[in-house]
Length: 257
Image (tube, rainbow, N blue to C red; front, top):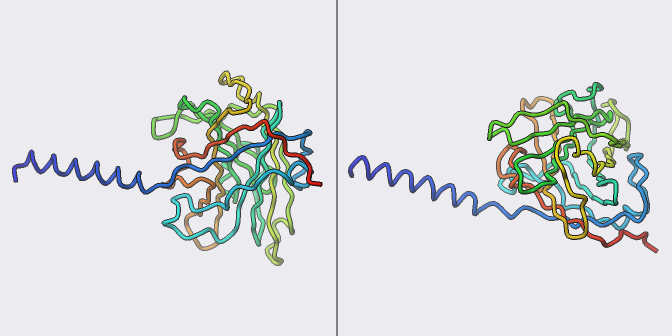
């Protein structure tokens, strides 16, 4: 076979392989976000009545998807919203809750952490990231475009008015006993994006892209585990087209009778 023909065949094979890999990935997950009947009290306990009616997401999976083993600890999320906040509640099963970083805007994923990736303008390249550990230490940043498009993180962006709280079901940084886990509660202001972009106020039917990640370090292992809500297919959270869909609904999360 002539060299030119060989190259054409190789290129075609590569394209077919890429297409096959993309076809094997499941469609990104979706979540219907109900309205909170009243403001949520942020204390990390997830016991406000409105949370009873908010559905949990499916359990987190490995960042690469079902081709990898299921995570050894359960993680799941639920969300609500009102005119001022997107509320996020996360439940992380963990037999040894630990954290070390206390300085804001530290590289939080060096600890076990919980991460939120939000793209309120789905048609743009930009998005926002927030990470938090079990000491309630946070790191927020804005990315005008993904790293694989030569994007540079803007660490000067702060989530003005952010409310966060952690509750530990056990004892923090005490490996001699067994914990149940930790819960995260976040009130993410809908106005937080205003100093970077003009983001319309969500309404019934609005859709954002969103994903969540959990970084879990295991003693003796050089690399961390990455568990996510909507699988990315690659070990990289910065592929927004693989994030899930957040659908805002006018239906209210009423208290169960």
